[in-house]
Length: 630
Image (spheres, rainbow, N blue to C red):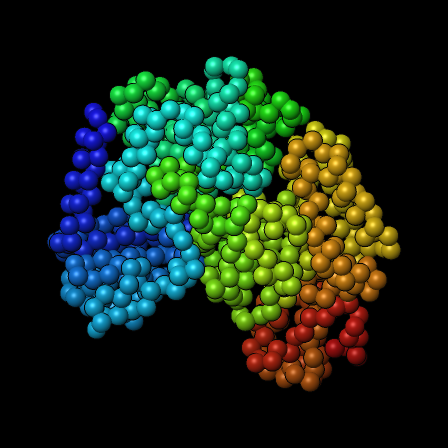
């Protein structure tokens, strides 16, 4: 079957679906949607549409990026725009079916906004304003097509670029990628075109290509969402890369904790084989390529390319010295090209629209867009695709909606545990490879965790270093033992056992680990500690010198008290919810906390029904003495 025949078949299916004669209901059933109950919503729509004999198309699609609003349902009807409904419950689903699918009431009171303008003036609903700040290229199909239907991908332009590139000399493809200025989206930002050229020019004719989908940063889920929502975009870029560098076999390395992404990948590979997009003589050309999906066991260190390659070979995932680099000697000592999910997804876009288009987006040294995962204390968690050079302020406030509860922004952690924590004073820093490195952070996998005034930066550093220490492969003594020693110092500081000289010792250890570690994990392991020391040193000093946690987080440095002037003793909310029976009533009925039994869970503060809670949290623990039997 020629590509033109494949494309004609796909377009016929797509046009029948979007002829505008029947409603189309899209339900986001990526992992975020499923966690919020989207599958039950999809079941309700499917059951009711069939039971009532409604003529409508129902699609289970990927993630639109609005993870905070899941479950999401998007409905289009002839003459109406795409209307997005958020936080859909079974009751809302039934109302949409009755009032909108069966009748013509779009239930504007339930609408979150439109995705393509307001339609007729009488039915005007504002567009989702966050999309005004975004440019969706990598995410353009996410939440729009059925990721399990290859025809949807082909009908929206998919595999057209591959068909064209199979008739293009490899050196021409590599020239265009080099001219685009694309840098690797896995975090390090190495020039993609240069890496491709080095692999293409390697002496050995047997070459491999690998997609690194081992996204392991806490708070990062960009690669997972793209794999779940538009898997063929990555696979098309991978095939083009294989043709360009001369690879005949490839692998997608994805962690086993991503079951839905793996399901989508396996399904996509099966469909590609059915359409002649994998195997021998792809689309009638001389290009032969075979692909295998490899499941990783979830080791963070396997995000490092040499450790990843060792894992594919069946060995323990441990980095090795470089050079030689994988492009010279990788899988089974053969030249191997390793790129990230987002990097491969960029390839068809660049080759379709041209390098000049790509270079027109972003900054001088960081071209194109980047997709970020917004998490933490931000109001609107989810994905955002923005041009390189967009500031942290725009990302957190204009797109993310600002900090929850109108609390004060304190810091943003970017680049995962290997990245850094940046303060409010750096909110206007452009997000690009070089600007982030200059302030002590890095791009990483695109995870951004916003923190407010209730976050303790010392405890954040301890938490992330604990993750890094546990994920260290142990090969390098400085990484294995140095991170353990740093973690012990941080644990002492947050438990009130810190002492003078600890800050200096942390700094010296961090610098030694950076210099003496073999791989990127070890070299970047101290970044969070170094940036918190750089920007939040006063918090470390308060923990050490005053035995005080300014954010009231570290349990050994805080205490809960009940103020007698506020507590009337009229209720027993705190008493009945205290798991350790630390709260009782004194002789006049006022509640008191036995500090020897209190485990500082904070439940009493949460359940106190008073507008101004009678329970307060203080640091250091003895800053409010127990007067009498308070």
